[in-house]
Length: 221
Image: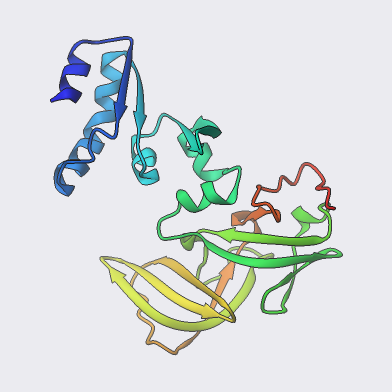
């Protein structure tokens, strides 16, 4: 194959444009595991283009995200995942999809979309205004993580059981979220449920979708 030929040549630079796209699912999964050590052994610099963010996470190394032909973020793959620079990148690197909620910063508190107030000390310095709070499904849990965790109440829409993991789809006001929990937690549709979210696991974005850094003060207007 073209992939094998490129690696055998031991070129200094290897460019791969979606090399696994036409393979069946099983073979694609196998190669995703085999390619990283293979790339390391060749000593080549490999540029691997893919439209699947999860593939980038599996391959590791360094990741560059592109939008409309421009690089929007570059760094170690784990860093791009944990510290996305904008909402679109955060959504791309989240499976199941990123949970979001509109919030208003008012004084020292966040006013959540369910009219609940949440005091989050790490965001005290940012300007008042409207923001989007993002959090990944595995960070929405059935038990509080710490004393700053906020309780989010809602109604179960459906529960998916996958092996020893549960995906709880819930509705809270106008929001629909997914909680990814370990163990079998099979809630019937319509069941009231309380979930907990810690501020340390939240991503905050401004009205333009840019990640808010707690180290600098935002300017609105």
